[in-house]
Image (cartoon, rainbow, N blue to C red; front, side, top):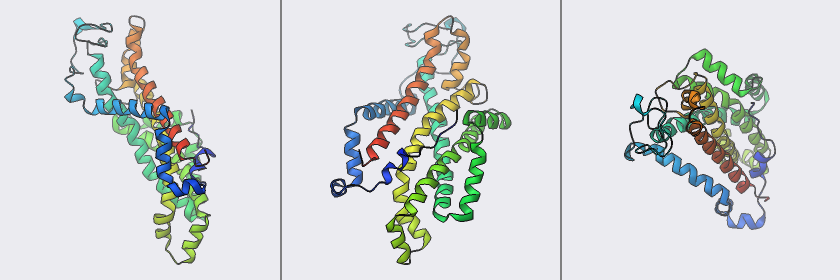
Length: 301
């Protein structure tokens, strides 16, 4: 699975707004479009519920997600005092799913944020400066692009060893090249606009042009693309944990829970599938919300 960089949709927010939309204001118009998109609103609501429940997990009065009991192994859904049953070690599944969301979301958001900072700076620098600097930065990114993202993540995690820190580092290195490429692409387009040429003619410094004129036009497309990568990061992090290259037991993490429950699929398949359901719901919500943001920022729509 290789991470593809969008070519057409990501440039849509760079199109100059029409007279009607310009008179109302671009970002208020984006907000109105989002409020009229029920799919994006529902996905945002689901993600907000998952995030809030994960953050507030210690305040919800849940069972201890680490407490084991051999006499309560693999309780089915709806069991007394265990709404979603228990896992292979008798730990409460509902509590582990809620607490697991904290680590899974952290493993999904943190690498993308770090890659956004590093890849965004490199891409904007390459796109604005151009020349040999652009060539050097983008050729280094092409080296990473030679490997599929899944294979690269597995290779880096295998070389660094299992653990949360190493997984974060591996995923960050995987996401820097696509974000850098998108940043370079949109910055190159903005660099050719008339207002940038006018700023140069007025004697503005390169740093001032980037800060005042370039960032405001490129951050939107870059952030939208980075949002779509969060779902990929969650899936990759879960996959690494499933393979034993990510989070270590007994931490509650959705991918690791899938690994430990795989032997129970013949005894209680619904219970074994619950972590996968949470991964699916979270990743699809991030994807649909990213599509909604991209559509709302397309002033041609």
